[in-house]
Image (cartoon, rainbow over all chains, first blue to last red; front, side, top):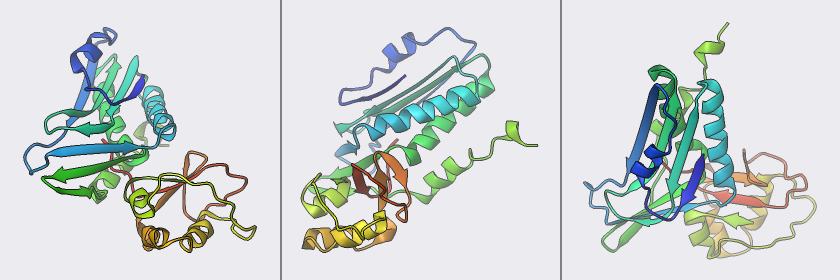
Length: 148
Length: 81
């Protein structure tokens, strides 16, 4: 299940709706509150965003045989401490759940068309993509289960 | 055309309809042609290394052909998550 929403992400409600599998891994990304940011604005590309998130969730579901994959991403204006993104992977065993959860957050950072604009007081600036994000996504390019 | 983030801000609009000449057959050539439309377009498209593109909602390299695309988007590298 994927969702793009302007409303606050209700993590407890999302957790309640997940199937009772042996392993559940979740990740919550939040607006950093420690570097002077007073507001974060998330812009996205309607249509293309949903397509990209569906592709990330579908790839994870197939690669790690997940019972369920969830990606919920916030758009619009939000305050420090608020959740930007929620990712969950439900699987039979922990390694699949943990790897799938990491894969989904790494991949959505490079594959989904979102753009962050930070405001500090009166100054607003667009966030630059980090090389580390590309490297984190690229580490999943090789699937050890498919090596010869 | 669709524009996002600082590309949208520099151009001054998030979308516009265009009718490029026949010799514009790639995303890169389209960007070159668009850069001549206004000072804002020129500013937005000054540094190709900072631009990414999608043709009919699929991410493509700037050298990609336009084909019979209906929707082309130009934007900065993505920063979600």
